[in-house]
Length: 296
Image (cartoon, rainbow, N blue to C red; front, side):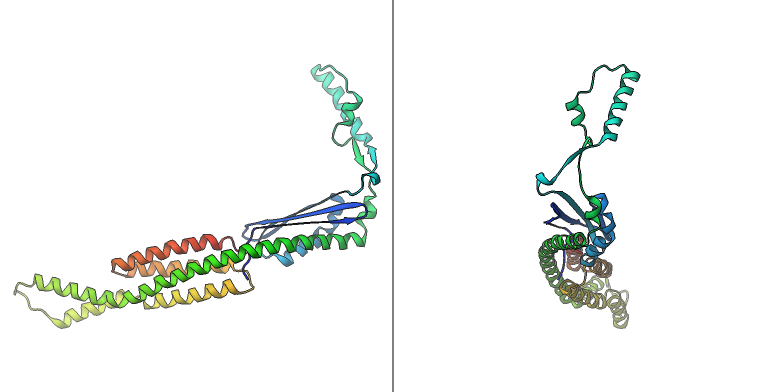
């Protein structure tokens, strides 16, 4: 199954009078990068949560946001942060003395300043609880399941699109394979016609030299090996898209190889229709490359 690198999941749980909210979102990235944002006193669990994410996701940037709030306001107690008040009052006095600013701080102004009033929490007891660890694991796992479900759905759409484009490449490949033998025969007829027109009786027509020229041309424009390798790459792409392993990097490599074979065919063939087919194939390969960049 193919997975997209973009997705979103969320969940929430109740624990110890708190509502703990989990939010996980992922976007494209060359490697697996996990960014965690959570209350500072819970950072002891950061490594554990990071490993939990990495067990589900192999590629992409994953942002994990964990917040908490009191589930029952009656259980929360506001306390005065005296050091913050002193700092604000000291700064206000400095503004008066340095800049000559007049005015007085009122009680309502001080209480409205950030950090003056704080929730009283038994943080140490909460952070050291084994139950909290289990709760964080459970909540994150629920969010990751929702994230992976979205990534799987989008990955399925991407894989279907890529398989359709591979089928188009196979159609172009079949046209190329049908035209490859015609190139030599058409060139032989054109060359024979030109020699007939140029021959005014002053030089003899030597069939064996004509045959040698045709043999050299046939060898130079032979694309059988390139066509065989292209077909092999098509089959490998299909196998990658239907496997359970991450497909993005493998597809990127295969697209590079298919581009190389297509370029070789374009440089070797001496036929207008074949040149146009190689251009169509390169355009389709570029679309595949862009879509594959979204896969894990």
